[in-house]
Length: 101
Image 1 (tube, rainbow, N blue to C red):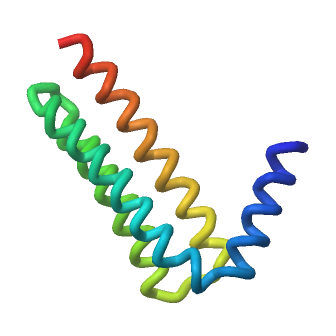
Image 2: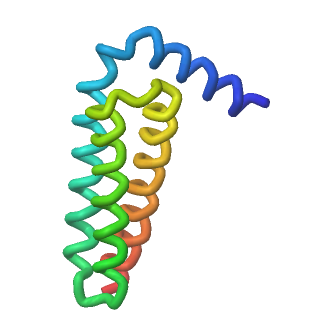
């Protein structure tokens, strides 16, 4: 219930200030994606680094493509959330791998 209201308030704010949030969200997801790619490449001795790197790049490209393709705001907002979650999960996974080496 609380999560849904936060999501709805965030989407409503995103929709109202769409032209302001688009450049900021592109920069944000690109920076977080770059950090995720850096940690993946630092652990490149592991087996699944290519799959993780492909996942990271695919989500970043999907978000950018949704913006450039002028999809609906709901799709773009959901892709932003999904992209950020994937990048953060990849950072955490590879950060823990890196600390155990």
